[in-house]
Amino acid sequence: MQKLLDYGPLLLSGAVTTVCLAVLSLLLATLLGGWGARAKLIRPQGDALNKGLIRLQARIATIYTTLARGIPDLVLMLILYFGGQRLLNWATGVAGLETLEFSKFLAGTLSIGLLYGAYLTETFRGAWMAVARGQGEAAEALGLRGLRAFWLVLFPQFVRHALPGYGNVWQVLVKSTAVVSVIGLEDLVGLANDVGKSQRDPFLFMLVVIVVYLAITSVSGWGFAWAERRYSRGLR
Image (cartoon, rainbow, N blue to C red; front, side, top):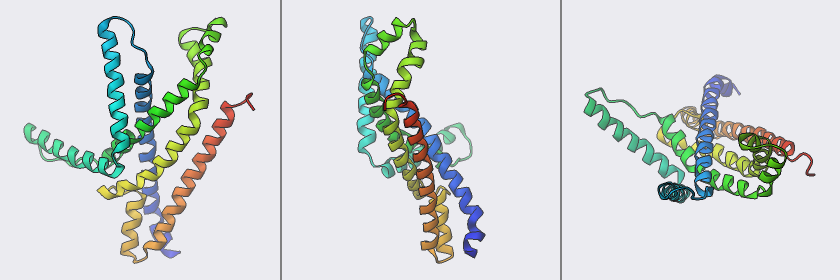
């Protein structure tokens, strides 16, 4: 118990880093997922140039989701970290500046966000396709058009269909943050591993890691369940 009291503040700082990493990665994944879903769903229209650009965007989204879902998260993280460091070294060399260290936190956020953005692309695409096509016409019949129809009628139904998959992606994403310790980020897992080795009691500190991750996933799971019930009112 004394060991936990001594190193509690240090582990707490690692837990904060882990939560920040997970939240920012989810934000990036959400933006990429929204773009990817839109690119795959939008129908080519307009002149030939516009149609070509729409088709190109859809192909880029398909390539992105295929690659991101096929590359292991650890491999992608190592590529971004070491590749980013080499690119930064080259840029500082050209500019005649001192060598800078590529941010481990940034590498972790980019790799996790890119990876799970591909999964959210399919989650959002499926959720949008689940919204009945007649809902837009029903909104127009009520005098709602454009953004008002989207936000008041279509978006709530989209969220209802997307929430289960979105919550699952978040739960898996949180656990994936543990991989970031491999590149030296002082997150919860990395600090617990270092402290466990120095105190010759890795089992105790890894138990703390388990408890913290279970707390994060349990609380967030409850939050998503509440959101699903809220958006499903009137249907059950």
